[in-house]
Structure formats: C-alpha cells, structure tokens
Length: 283
Length: 352
Ligand SMILES: Nc1ncnc2c1ncn2[C@@H]1O[C@H](COP(=O)(O)OP(=O)(O)OP(=O)(O)O)[C@@H](O)[C@H]1O
Ligand SMILES: [Mg+2]
Image (cartoon, rainbow over all chains, first blue to last red; front, side):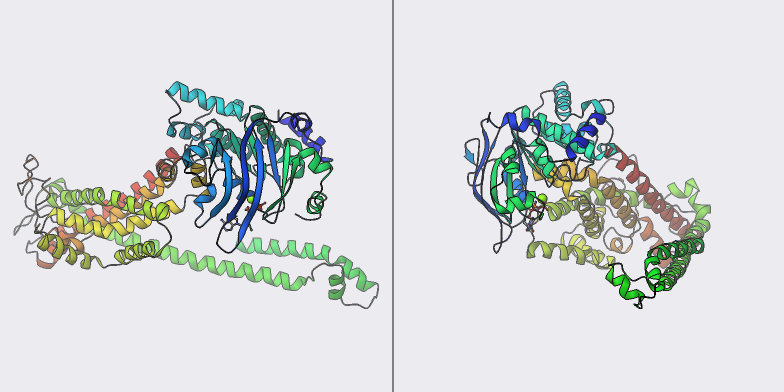
C-alpha cells in the first residue's frame, strides 16, 4: 500500500490534478448535513475574527476550506462543534443549522453534538493509553457498547474505517505513542469515527505528516465521505484540496470570499484575491 | 573531552569560513579595490570574520568547561554532605535501630533499655490518617483550580491563600491546631488533633504538586477529550488524571516523608505522651487501643525532641540516636518508593 501511494504522490505533485472523485460526485449532492448562516466569531469584544460565513455542507462530500494563515479557517471549524465555547470570552454569532436545530442559539446538548460532529486536530493527539483504549474510551463513556464483545467489534470497525486495522490488529495493547505520526493521526480519526458521527472536521490533519502518510489520510477522508459522512477539511495544501474535495471555500481576512465546486474554484476562480492565492502570490 | 570538541568545532568553522569567503578573496585578488565587507554585502552574504568566530567558539568552550566544573563540584558537595549526614545518623543509631526489642518495646520512664514501639506505630498511623484526609481534599482543590476555576479575583485569592498556607512555619500550624482542635473543639491532645494539624500542613504542598501535575498535561489531551463529547469531569478523570498520576503519586509520597518527620506541628496537638498500646484491644474508647483516634500519640520526631529536652533515662543518647536512625531510614525508604512507584505507574498507565 505504501509503495502505490508513493507513486500517486509523485504523479500528483507535477501539477494540481483534480481528484478523480471531484468530477463525478458534485452532481449527486447528498442531503444537507450542516448549514451555517452569517456565522461570526469574537475572541474579544473589540475585534471580530470571523464574519458572515454562510456555507452548506452535504453528506457524502468532502469540503475543503482554504485561505492564508490567520484568515479564520480553524476559527470557523471550531464553531461547528462549539469547541470555540471552551475558549474564555469567545462568542459565536449567527446561526448553524444541524438536524433541525440552531446549535448557536438553541439550548442543545453540547456533548451529544460533539459526539456526532467529530474533530481531528492539526497535531496527532492520541491519549496516553493503549491503541485499544484510545478508541474504546469514548465509546464506553457514551454508553454505546452493550457488552465487551460489542465494544471489541466497534473498536475494530472504527479502526477499519480509518484504514488502520491491518497495521495495528496484532498489538492493540501497545501504547498509541509507539505508532508513527501518520498512524497516530489515523488513530485519532478512528477514535472519532467510533462514535458514528455524521460530520467529521479535520483541521490541517496532514500538516505534521510526510507525503505517504498524507496520502493515507486523504484516502481515508475520501472513503469516510463515501460512507455518507460530511467531511470538512482545512488545508494549506492546494493540491490536497484539489485531490480530495468536492467543494472548496476560500477564506480571506475573516470572511468567506468564494465557494463552489472544487473543479470550478481551481479552473475558473472569479475573485481576484482567490486568483492571487491560487497562483501563489500570497499565503 | 570538552577541550577536544571545542577544537574540532573551531576547525570546522574555519573550514566553512574558508569556503564562504573564497569569492571575497578572489574579488580582492582581482584588484577591484573594494573592501571585502562591501562585496559580501553586495552579494547578500553576511560578513564573516574568521578570527572572531574561532575566538568565540574557544571562549564558549572555555566558559562551558568552567561552568561544568563549578556545577559538578557543587553537586558533589551536596551529595557528600547528604551522605555524611545519613551515614553519621544511621551509623550512630545502628546498634539500636536494628534491634527488634528496641523497635517493639514501649519507652521506659527512668531505666535504661526502653524502646520506641508505640512511637513507631503512632508515626505511621498519623501519617495514614493525614493522607486519608488530605489527599481527597487536595485533589478536589487542585482539580477545581486547574480545570474549573474561572480567571477572576476569587481564584487568585484562593491560590494566594494556598501559597501563604504553604509558607507558614509548622510551629505556627501546631499552635493554631492547639487553640482550635485541642482547646476550642475540646479534643485534647489526640491523634485527631494531630492529624488535622498535619493536614493543614500537608494540603498546600499537595495542592501545588497536583496542580503542577495537571497543568503539565498537554492542552491537546483536553481538547481531544472535549471534542469527543466527553464532559469536563470525564476528561479530567479518564484522560488527565491518568497522565498526571505518576507525578501525583511521587508528590504524595514525598510529602509523606515531610509529614512523617514533622515534630513542631505535633508537639501541641498529638501530644508528647505515648500510652502503652495493647494491640489485642479493639475498644476504640480505651486509651491503650492503638486505633483510638482520641488518645494522645507521641511520634518518632516528637520523641527525639522530648527525650533530648527532658529525658531522664540513662541511655537517652542511644535512644535518641536509634530513633533518629529509624526516622531517616523510613524517610529514605519513602523517597526510593516514590521513585520506583512513579516510574512503574507511569509505564502501566500509559501502556508504554
Ligand atoms: N484563542 C484565540 N484567542 C484570540 N484570538 C484568536 C484565537 N484563535 C485565533 N485567534 C485569531 O483569530 C484569527 C483567525 O485565526 P485562525 O486560527 O482561525 O486562523 P487559520 O485560518 O486557522 O490560520 P492557520 O492557517 O495559520 O491555522 C487570527 O487573527 C487569530 O489571531
Ligand atoms: Mg488553523
């Protein structure tokens, strides 16, 4: 597996090649998974880090968020599972529609929300536990497993979905820190998939990884989306956006400037700032 | 060895500088009449002064050598001092300390040949009681301060209070305990009074240790837990505490050493008398029942103080030395156990 990803990487680094899925999938939009309206974020009363972002994400799709550093991509992502509320003084405005409720303004159960909107961070952050316990912990805390056998099965299913099972099945009791960076990141993906989410947020999940591991994560993201989950991925790597995503949204200075099918965004951008960003003038 | 590597580094720098400066040299050789510095500036390379770099490397090497030497001497002195004290104390008390009769017999009032049986038991009993009271309280306080407390003046006041408490002299804690527990609560000189005084003495240290252990857990572990929909409490209990546990255990055991050797806080709370203990008695109201928390209980450290200040037994020096040796051995044992348990636990909890 490692060798053929390597050749893929070599093939795709020459130019920005569109992912093979992009063309075929955009026509068949799934149902709406999560929809934001005029979302803004204040980290303090004086400055607004994000304003007026309205985006719709569909199940079965990979959506890429691109833009220069500091433009608010992570800030936006952290609104979707309300992780921003863990930051003191941070305030979200606007509305985010998810399963019929507005998670910003309605009283919702934040813990259930985060269970079904999973998040993978920039740096792999497995727990300091065994591989098995990394995946099993949240399953059992949420009371999802009816028995030990059920738990085992769920752990295995999650590890398979994250394309990690074959590499770790013989030493599930080993420390997660004995894994490579890419494997750790896939373990973190498995950990969230174990909770059967319908949205998966990934904040630059490959920034700490080499090209092979990156390709493995991308393939994983693709297969997760194909199973009906809405995957939203922040990336600095435009080739990555082109390879994996169906839609791409461009952020600039706290605003969402342009959004559309990935193919169109890269082949025919309309905003000048996006044109400049794609041609590598800044960012 | 340090000298050797410094020389090597100097040689490497020289070699690099020679490479870097060759275009400059050729420019000069061509007789262009510009200074080396301005040429280097024009091509965008930094000006390199070979001799200064070599001198700098040499100087840094020399400084490092001197610093290493001084620090090694200081470290050696500290070790030697510690070893001397320990060897002296254990050496002069060895005769008694390894005598089973001395360790089990009650002390005698006037004649030679008394032991320290009750004191030894009292010390451990008080320690265990103190830990049983102070660990849950400190754990709760530290978790609150690190994970829940909002950043405001109340939290800051609590943190300051804990720091002040930890710098109180133990005799002050003892006298406060005397006023509050012994007189006000009317508990008399008792194990309970002593254990609570020791708790006051121990809590600030434990809170500190646990706070630091929790703060040392990387932020991303918290984020990971919360992002999986776990509550703050679940995150703390199932993710943060296991990470922090080795440091916490080490801290608890080290603080136990301090509690075990404490005298001043106990003189006016647990008292200076050790009624003979009857280990067959389980009548919790009898003063000779070892488990009775309302009886006075002299500990090893208090015994050393008392025997030296008002002892009348003819072998008081030997008794004092033997007691001191036992005390030191126990505290050394705590330290070794702390290291061992901390390391084992760390390996177990993190599956590494
Ligand atoms: N916790 C925070 N407190 C205050 N300001 C913040 C915080 N996090 C982000 N910001 C500010 O919000 C703006 C957007 O930051 P954000 O992290 O969302 O950018 P980003 O697009 O993810 O950048 P990068 O690509 O570098 O990760 C920045 O100006 C940043 O300074
Ligand atoms: Mg970011």
